[in-house]
Image 1 (cartoon, one colour):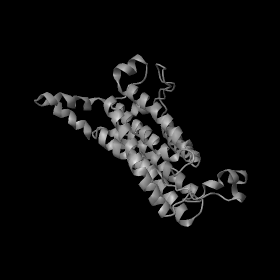
Image 2: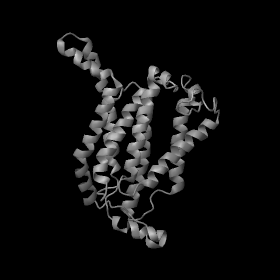
Image 3: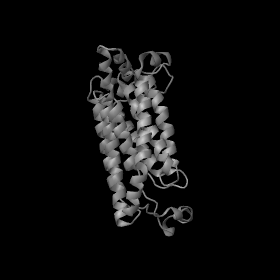
Image 4: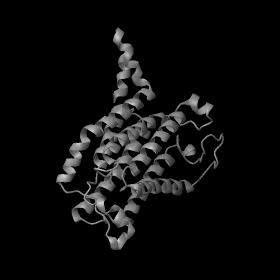
Length: 276
């Protein structure tokens, strides 16, 4: 949205040139990180108080279920969960503000974020309302995640401009793809990555700062890779595959990193809230 301020730089007046910075991904990426960070800090306490008043506390498995882990995690019983509401909310708002709205990669990522966040919200809501550690059945969650993977894969394979590159498997800094054509194995590969990543993050939640810290680290790394892959000069120099339009994903990644740092303010030891 803020990208369109760039067009004001083409108008008359001495101040018009100042709007030129809005065309640069690097500028908007930094602004996205700052925006998400501040949104988390501003709304974090209010959301935590609201979750506490609603008694949306973290359910803990019993000693019979997890034995020794119960002794380590028992003290966390009652800590508000569903903190992902303001974390993911800040990421989405920041992305909508600073990313180009005409970029299809941005909308695909936002759809993926909202889909997985909605699934996580429903799972947590069932847990806290029933006061049990079991939410949506694991089989149902896996089916939903595989449906998401199928949608994302179809987006690439049914787009003639993206189909060839979607089937290539690269390792960073290698000139040529390791596998030039994954064929229909592309669907399996996408499914493993999306479902595996989603569940890996979910498994790390529940320890103070663990899921958030990992998210910030990974998002920052992907921000660099997305920027490099979307800049033809940088991609050529580093021998990375060039994907036109992927530079806008830098903004989503920096928003995720900035929001993660803001969320970490409340999630570090002793955690006031869990992501959920």
